[in-house]
Length: 298
Length: 294
Image 1: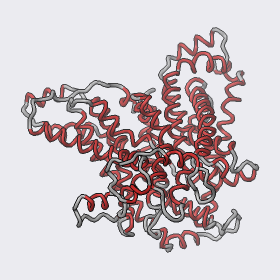
Image 2: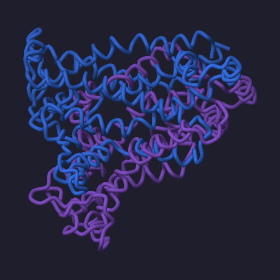
Image 3: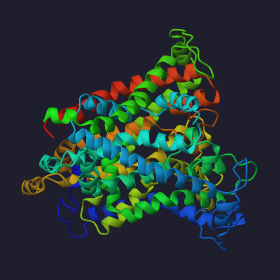
Image 4: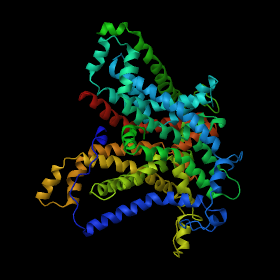
């Protein structure tokens, strides 16, 4: 999988002049872009239409009288079937869940990867194998017993619950990421630090972690998008007061009684997608490196 | 050296929580789920063993039969279509076309979004009264009909559209990296021999990209088996329960119908099927690589 990060310049046969094949190629690419962009276009323009215009259909038509009211409603007054408070509380919950989860899971993955790479302890490869195997199995296998464990400990449906669950299930990819990186670090560096009298934590915090800054960046991108986009763990573990944005969005859209306000729904959807999309557009090639490295998550 | 390390307590203390965490949260929970599948547990787990009765019940439950048929059709088609689309896009992007970066960004952006978002987008677009069908009728194509999301026999296929939209970008990124890691000399040699490009792709490039393709297939199938969010958002498992998947079935029996025994039996079946497919690949990928020397 490391090949994915290696090269960036195009190769292959040189372009010819404008032949029919070339025209066909551009046609195919244009059609594909249309397929990928059309849904976003429809969402954006629908979110800017008043309900009277939405009822007419014409999903591809530019709004006659654009309005940002649906966005305001989506943020602060859309109904979930229980309450009409919009999606803003989900936004704050998602932030409260994502920031600690990202930090804890990256720290845990880096620490475990560091242990595996430099401190060969008995049984640690077995443990790592078990962890990776766990990453390949559907989450449903682990969910119910975890609910029981957290309920038994009196922590079910709390912030602590959802953050630790994200840490547990982020561990395989985070560990893999850091272990792969650390195993490419020359062992002499580690030995030199040992000779200089640095201990376990000192080497980790002052030598290895700063060295792994590029991996940390990739890990942050992966975890921020992954945790923000999570729905399953949010519904099961977060508890109603901490529901993340994805859960609230699904409730707003799929439990509405009476007429559905598609313009508000679409505004809420775009708002939910905004954070990962921003990460994606800002991070550029780093994002591709991230999905290449974290692809095992599936 | 070994002695020196043994004296050092810090690494042992650092790794101990990982032992507890992994043994409890991964292995322990999995074994517990398997254990539950042999019991008569309803809302709460209880150790009242009933042998294989839950499995008998599972395999005669219509909803499970639907769900397992759905997941095969869904996975196989999703993988085949995403692989084809992703590969064609990668080949197209590898032809030194203009604005490659922009086009790649456009193709990959759906992958950054949540399955819930993807599911909701396509729920609207595929809604006959509102989306694509309505748009075609408005344009004057009155006979255009697309009602998959409301047709019990087609609903599961409508989810594939959303899946392809979101996942093809990932396949494209993986394939493009694979294409560019292939030795350029091959192209020169083929040119000298006068072999047409399409022939080079089919006979040389694709066979050479076997590991890349395997990676893509494994990734896609792991994602497909887990299909939950996108189904919830796009069809909610409906109409009726026609587009249920095993993941939906399990969540439904655990948390809505409160039939833990049956849900656990379904989990165990999924575990067995996934293991049969992935464990050989898993060992090949991770432990052979190890021996080749890291």
